[in-house]
Image (tube, rainbow, N blue to C red):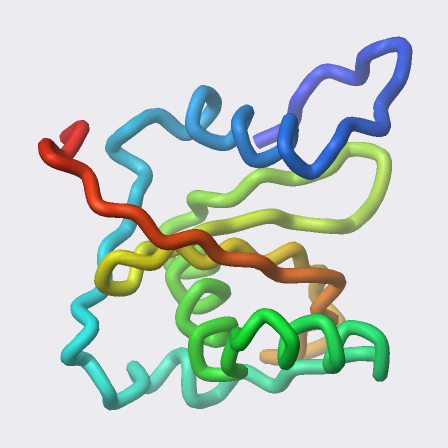
Length: 130
């Protein structure tokens, strides 16, 4: 899936995240049970590359490698991810319990992904949109 380039291809993280809901639609929200402690087999095979700065940022945000692996595994399995046409970066999200995890990443080899950033937010919806 590609998006048209605008006059200014650089957008804020907030705009990028908001556009994911519009592009992917409400049905794209994948939900994983918080009780699923065991990583799926495809997620176990994923190797992560992170700079020291990204490691520190993710640690500060309490985002675990297993959460990142779950997001990437789901995105790669379903194809539900955004692609930045001005780079090789993908953005995907996954709801685990009541937390949405977002990961910006790029392929770095077989079953290896370079993590550029990640964030999460927690909220409770009174009614699911799908």
